[in-house]
Length: 306
Image (tube, rainbow, N blue to C red; front, side, top):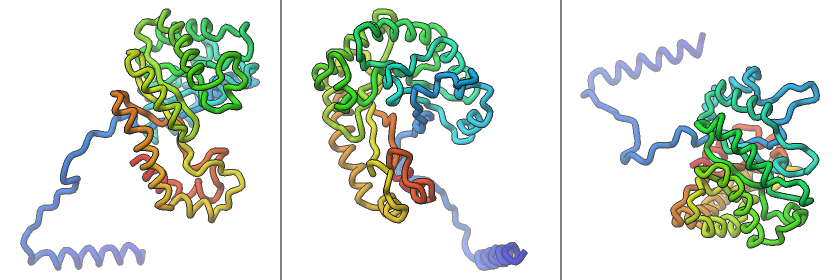
């Protein structure tokens, strides 16, 4: 009650003080209008493992998962990317089937998500896996049933990480990666000539593979978005809360964002391609408890989005 009374008095004082003055018109907004922020600017990224059914047969991405549907609706999440490490590792994890895909897009419709990036495995530890043909068959099913909700496809995840591509039967460097990526993309475009792709989903701040991919594929006609990952603070495991808070609010991190833009984003844009961060956070490995999950984490997110 005291707070309410105090506010009422302040309002009365302001009204009285302003009564004798000349009227003033105030318009809020930027002096120069900038480009409109796309509706799907903010998105969420999940590992492909999230599509697989639980032990009881239920799905995380399901129209009946009301808490998740409400979360997406309340936050205004309009873009969803499925990929991550579990898109291809471990190989024994399994590949989502038609029922899993149907459940995913039922959720997408219920949550009001506009576009989805759907990833396929690239890593092959044995030739008998035949991922290229399997990918093409699944891509055709998604295209036939859910094409209006599809942003594009993606193939592989963080191929620049040596501990990932060292397990592949073909990939030894960026050149061999590009060659194999084109083979896998060709298998999909043979089934779906209008298919478009995102890539390369390079590891945190690995500018070389991203810009090399953009340069190599800029005239292919099938690239929708160049994708990058960035965890500016590295691993959060073992970082003290106070240290994490200082880092989140540090001008050095803003400078790191600018360097990444100058070295990665600017060359990509110069090649006539847009870019998107499909993975980004202040730290990976779960963040820093007591820092990432505080208001300082929200302030960092605003800096990064800007």
